[in-house]
Each structure stands twice: as C-alpha cells, then as structure tokens.
Image 1 (cartoon, rainbow, N blue to C red):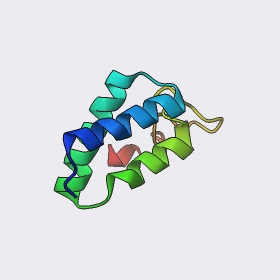
Image 2 (cartoon, rainbow, N blue to C red; image 1 turned 30 degrees about the vertical axis):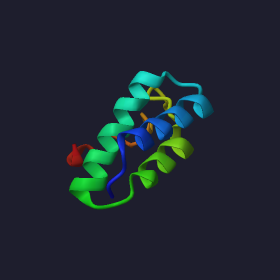
Image 3 (cartoon, rainbow, N blue to C red; image 1 turned 90 degrees about the vertical axis):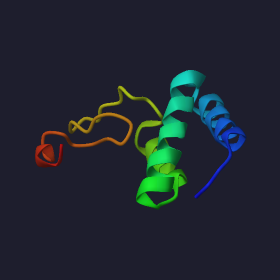
Length: 83
C-alpha cells in the first residue's frame, strides 16, 4: 500500500485530535506503521491503528486489570516467548 506523506500526516492529525495525544509521536507511529506493515509485511496499516484505538485509545501506558500492556494490550507475561 503506497500512501503519500501528506495522507500519512492527515491520518496522524486525525488520530492526535480524536484521541487527544501528541502529534509528534503519533506521526512517527503512523510513518513506521505504513513503512513496516504496508510495504514490508503487506497488510493494511489501518488494521493496526484500529486495534490500537480499541485496545488502548492510543495510550502507550495503558494497562488492563489482567496485565495487558501498551498500545496493543499485549500480555507480555503470557507471551514472553514471542518477544
């Protein structure tokens, strides 16, 4: 999926406004997601953003009551073999 820098900026701007998070780190996250998932892995980066929105509301410090952590709410204690 090829997307222009301008379109990436629009996505980052929307996320920053909608979830009330800082523009600069979100822009870096969006850029990395499009580079990695879109070009290298081959799936739509919007899927990644959707999971982050639902799981953590784009709060990188989010932690659930059962220990899921971060943007994607990963259970690091349970899935330590995958890190």
